[in-house]
Length: 479
Image (cartoon, rainbow, N blue to C red; front, side, top):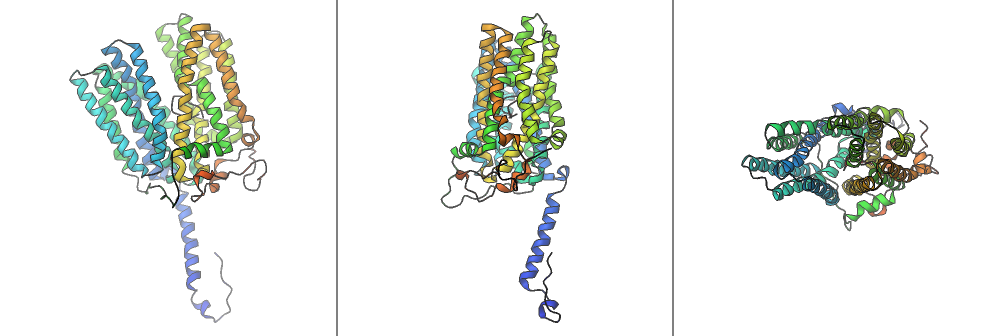
């Protein structure tokens, strides 16, 4: 704090001028605010309340989703209809992420998440009562599944956009890394819980999911920090297209989203599992062995979520993106040439391991580079673009397998993932600084339509020095 040099005996020596006193108080207050803002993430009660709430919501979602096909198969025996419901859920969640992002930039984000949770509480609660009453018409199942997917599409970008409001810029990467753990833990824990509950009573998975969303809602009430977005300035229009425009105007995000889309097309969770199942069956594997193979592959995502934080701290972002991008084509080539089945599961596990790491890192860059008032729309655009590529990949894998067999399936995956990885060779990606180096460029008053200026690592070395040191494991999650 600067001390004014006034002559002894002056009035200023006896009592500081009002403006000096205000300046001193402001500096002290700012320092205190910074110290409080930089408290460890585990002691950030608002963020931990959000994280825990989202963890319960993710577990509830996975518990219900595994029960939809089981219910359809038990009621009608139609695998085609079960697949159609799954596709409808994916398409609905993908499309609804766009208006969901727009809503996240226009209203209180906590209120929006609470509304989405309560809709699912009522929807799944009533549905479970109808199942108890033996009212399980396929049209009803379709309506409930699609309605729940619509809420998911709206709440996903909202929950991710809220992170920036609750943590300081220096902890964005750590927060997004922690966020990955709850998703992959739910992915691993939800299906067995849902399957076990379905074995007891068909309505139980949906009833427990309804309770899970209710718990998630209660936890959101413990967030004390206001989560209202910045008011719209005169003449400003927060339309949906702005999310796509900002994404296109950000060189780093633009290059990475191209990789994410191509990688999702080649290695989408459902598509890779379909390829493994078909390959295992063509080689005469039993159903139990195939299940074990899928478990080996799926563990990769959970391990990746647990090590994401330490890995991001120790490895330069540029190296992480380069390694992750080129793991894809190398893994696909190995899948096309190795013999045996267990090695296939291990290789896919290595592919899935990169997912939560690069997803957390990509989302940290997005949070740093995009103004808070545009976070929802950009996240909605990212989710739409990453999710919409997944069905194309699943369809292509099934078609190629039926036509030419597993070797050509993995060969096509190698070609697609290799082309998708090319943007990571750009100098902008190879010279990336850590996400926090870009945080001060996301000015709150910057008009979204103009994009957000990002330091050019090739020329603006004083602002963002070169650092020496998102695709999807499952539809809807960027890698």
